[in-house]
Image 1: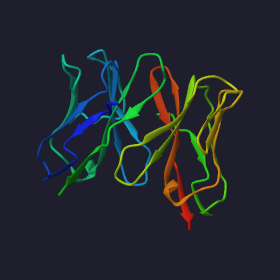
Image 2 (image 1 turned 60 degrees about the horizontal axis):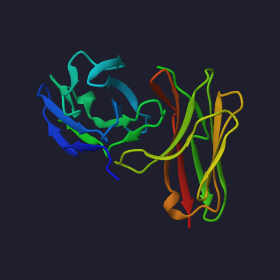
Image 3 (image 1 turned 60 degrees about the vertical axis):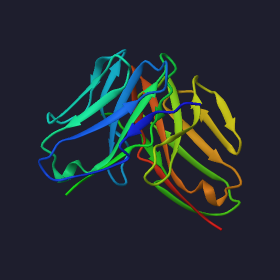
Image 4 (image 1 turned 180 degrees about the horizontal axis):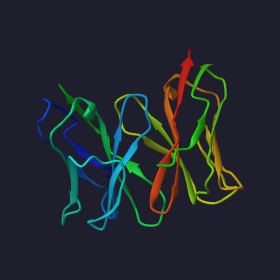
Length: 112
Length: 109
């Protein structure tokens, strides 16, 4: 079965650079979520989209933005990167009304 | 955001032993989910529970949705080395998912 696809899997950036992460949700899943996970922590909610419209915002810094496109893929844009942005970033998708959430394999961002 | 209380934080067990972990919340949820996460990988959904009192099994895993809708537990029977990892609970309410702090499981062969 198709899973959530994320790219790139690994990314190394310098401070103050910009990074873009991509996510392809499971087909026919109408909601996409972005999470940030630091070492030893649970996933922290950043932002979500329902049918390509932003639906909720969590602890997403103003330096970050995201959008969902007409083909349902989503991108997380991170600018003015800081050392503290180093983390695993997960995209997850959910089929409507199920309360189920399926994660991608994540993108590991390292900021030097 | 809301965080669920998950315990224990870590467990060290012998291969073949049974394991139990639980999550509690001050709020009710419509769905309880249990995930396993390996290092550097995404959480994998193990079991989803949809109504209060529901008891669901998936192989050696059994989970229950508490009747108050504020708690859930996960049992793993006859543990094996590949059960090693971090287990997260999650509650779903209002289009949001709230996660527990995780239980780190180590299985000693």
